[in-house]
Image (cartoon, rainbow, N blue to C red; front, side, top):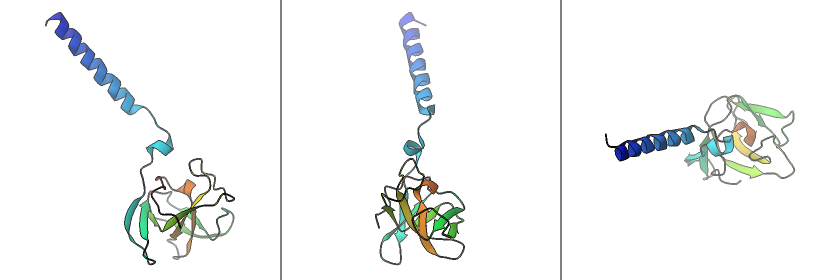
Length: 129
């Protein structure tokens, strides 16, 4: 093989290796999270959004993350009606620390709030309440 052809082949191989290494670099969970997706219309005529979430996530009566657990999400993914950011109600999430999502629990069908920290998908696509 001619010397310039060898150099060109080596450069291409190194470039391909560098690209593969870049693809394998870890990203933060905020960057790696896929978006929630619209999956239909809820009972009030709003879009329903499906998101990946923690199986068994608590559903709270109030957006306080306290002891008022009224239901759980047993499925993953689950659907959510809307989102709200309550600046005085932190949820422990580093991505959206004040965001809560309105949904219906799986145990007894009670409506309530789930912490954004229990949702793995990016929730910006969920409509505001």
